Image (cartoon, rainbow, N blue to C red):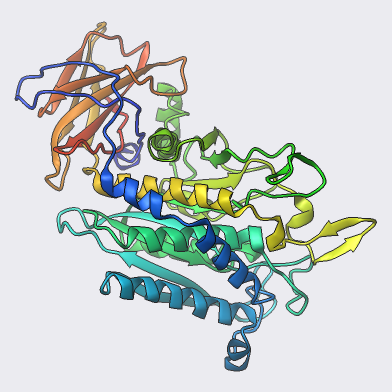
Length: 475
């Protein structure tokens, strides 16, 4: 349970000037945080034209079904999933050349054989992965993942000959992962960032499940996963409030961020503790979603993540859930309003309605905004100190004061700590509710633990803040 709650995290609005003395010297401030020039540069570097070129190139492979062709002849013709994954690999390698080999590019392959869901014959599934290693040996083991899935499908799962362009689902998410790799590989971060294009999603999350299970077995310290699936913005001509930007019900300035409540990997004992302490809204994934919303106004002006307190949409699922199943914090980015005529449909026109997941329905400027938000979040996470460990809230006696203790943030980057709180009636951390307590590992606040939710976060000398950790009760 300790490990679970040590991953519980959020990034909060306030930035605080505090002393680093051994005794707590407290103070609060709601002044605007200073922006990191490196993150500003990376966000500015994101290109809608590059996003467009990536999506159109992926569409050009005609049918990227996991079951589609992967032989040498098809690859040479630029057709099928085999050609698509070779091209994605070439892009990661190109970015690596531009940064003197800073990216480790690899193909993670495995075979799925019947009986298996939507896999009628033995099929090789290949994840394309690029890793930007952390520059600080003491922090490089912390990993942050961004992903999209490059496989597609049409109306029939087994149809690998008719077009399955998959422009929005999910060339758009793959474009986000690739664009983040391109812009972030030009910079250095203490922790590690991994960029992935998954396969096998449409048949049942095979690619992400394989990766997440292997990561759990290897005891990788994956602190956050950003899953981008259907982030194309859905431009639908003819039903437009703003004709250039699509359907009148669409919101081009919003992206949904889905996160689980009670963790899928929680044990029965952990679930009992979550319920007993009223922490159903404090899962690692939900705190990650709050972090993303905090980053947005700092680095991506005019584009807002809308937090959805559900694991995913009704009747749907995504590969963030593969990571949730293994106990990792993971969220899903998805456009605000989907058009199901443009998902999982063989391109055609019937009764005046055009079907098919075509590139002309994608808003490339919207995808670029999603990429900027992903890039800013990844860079902020990878720049910050590690989480403070063993965070506890004393519950040994009936008192209105609240005492928190923690172990120092590992990795040596933290120079001070902050305590956050919010009323139990609120969903978000208010920006003014931050108290600097210095370079200490204990703090007592004149606030009742029965009325608020607390958290602790680490801060480095440049003002980068870690994810916040909600304490476990200790008697």
